[in-house]
Image 1: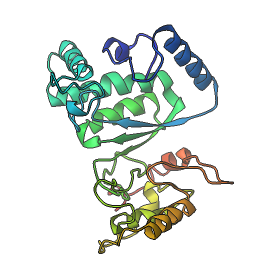
Image 2: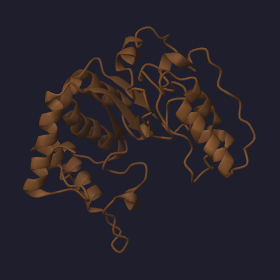
Image 3: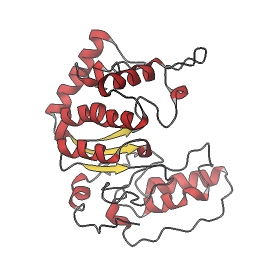
Image 4: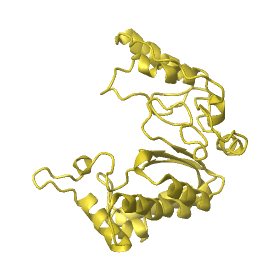
Length: 265
């Protein structure tokens, strides 16, 4: 979330639940931003590409959805703003506005401070626009687009992404110890510091589906231990004693021009 009076604020998207508001919030944002801009740190930014319009999950999943009135003010404000600015609010226009208003403000404000982007729900965004906005602000930034493949272990968007990012199958679909997650466990074991870069998968055959494993405590613990020993966590990258936990952005960007046009499979 951004402080100031940029497009995101004007679109009525400046408030989040559980955070300070008014002067206290602006002070908190200002202190954080001053530190970040003056530091030598770079960040990799995660974005839910469905945007404020909730193109993937729908308005019923918005934080302010009211079942009694079947309304979500945050969604309604965004759609109305897009309609005003673009003259339309169909799905294509909402995707365009997400890239040109929200992502662009982050990208331009922080420039080279953002070393990489992870666009989740990318099937609900305009990948060409997103790539263009990010690369215009920082030509060296690395990108990945996840369009729903679980687990995500191969470059499914050749020419668009520089590394592979994703998470195991959600627990609501299969238990953590299910064999559906085994390829990601094995990828973590063979990864470089817990990260799987696009070029690392070149020539590596994707494993065939196997029968589900019985989900019990031993399988869960065993799978978690294998992921941690491989340098990565389940869904969220975690620190291990004595290991750095930073994605090699220079490596990912440097390999961009070396990969075959077909990407890695």
